[in-house]
Length: 155
Ligand SMILES: [Zn+2]
Image 1 (cartoon, protein in one colour):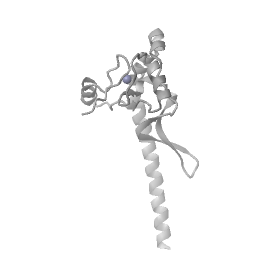
Image 2 (cartoon, rainbow, N blue to C red):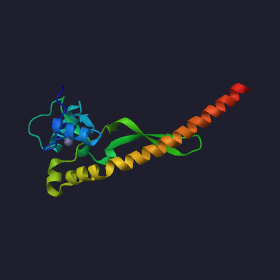
Image 3 (cartoon, rainbow, N blue to C red):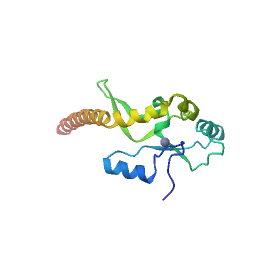
Image 4 (cartoon, rainbow, N blue to C red):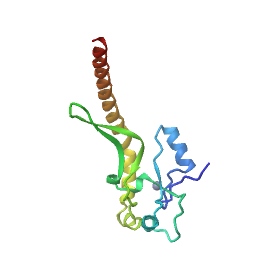
């Protein structure tokens, strides 16, 4: 199997131990993002990681090291009645301009650590409730759509 461990210093995301832990606890594996192909942006990532040697294109950085505003977890849809729904993406995406939170900054006041702690405490339950609500709403709309189509067929 390809090496897919997070390249962020001291991060264990993607390691065998991390995957085993997630599996045993029913936790979804965190998403790993490939380093940018663009050399200027890859240099920015390298700086953020505090790395002296160049990142190679096969390296990855996990979602814990980005500002939440750079990560897109949902498809946003506006229903015919004007209400907005969010559907969780099968695979979350990263904005084109995202750069990991600097390792130097995180050494000073450890925001990446608190981000990671925050993640593990609040993520799952919150998301599942949101998904259930959205799924229920979509099912209702799908049913209404079917009924409407049936009515047309009967005419
Ligand atoms: Zn990581």
